[in-house]
Amino acid sequence: MQTLRLLTTALALTATVAVAHQGVSNPAVMARMNAMSDISENVKTLGTMAKGQRDFDRQLARAAAANIADHAARSVDLFEAPETDPKSEALPAIWDNYADFTAKSIEMQRVAQALAGSIETLADVQAGMGPLGQTCTACHKLYRE
Image (tube, rainbow, N blue to C red):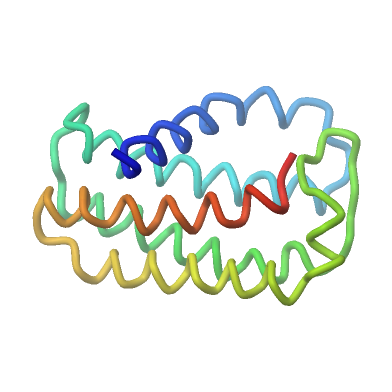
């Protein structure tokens, strides 16, 4: 049940991404938002497979998880400077506790890399969504509006 809640939350966040990017003037913030959007799209790819709304595709699922890992790794650098923009959803708490933010990004990278390397069946995607969703929630709870 918790996996379904995390998946539903991740998919709902995807729906708000396009609106959030309109009017962003700070290029550093836009780069962060684009990276987060890409993570969201890849989570959506995995989530729709897990829920049976899209046919299971091993290669696509592995690529989606690998893309999430890549973006999570880049997040550390993308968020290093405390850049702001009125449209940004990043909270100042990121820079108040950057070590924790970094640890959460690294954990997402680790979980996504492990998932990318282990997907063989639909059941693997379904089993991986809970741990992956937990990494999203852990960061968003503290560091995103």
